[in-house]
Image 1 (cartoon, rainbow, N blue to C red):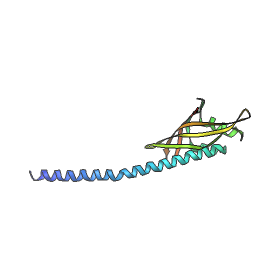
Image 2 (cartoon, one colour):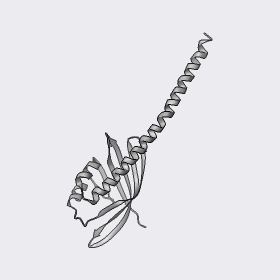
Image 3 (tube, rainbow, N blue to C red):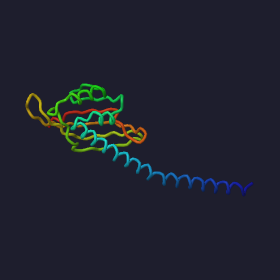
Image 4 (cartoon, rainbow, N blue to C red):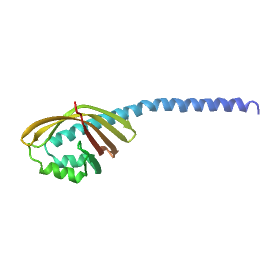
Length: 158
């Protein structure tokens, strides 16, 4: 009986070592997936800006989750259908959103939070304007793609 106890301990230590080694080897895979997710969300953010500029409601409809909550820079809320209706009825001289000045994505499993700054330009009451806004967009991984479920913009007053 005294001989089996050290053998059992040795086997337990070997099993612990194998589990720790397997866990260490899996860690870079998770980081790689996060990096892949970050790249995909950044690409989706850029596609959103391009679709907004070109008034492509179909493309925007594919980017937004059906129950997305959009918080505009004036504090008003819009649903997906309200936002798409506004895009489809806007004149080409209305607000145009340029490419983001900066984007940072943080991954939380199947959720990504994108933050950054975008420049908005257009015409209001016949006068040209340029505004900068800070944004926070929340994305979920759904199947092979990412969908935005919440978006908020806040004016930068400097």
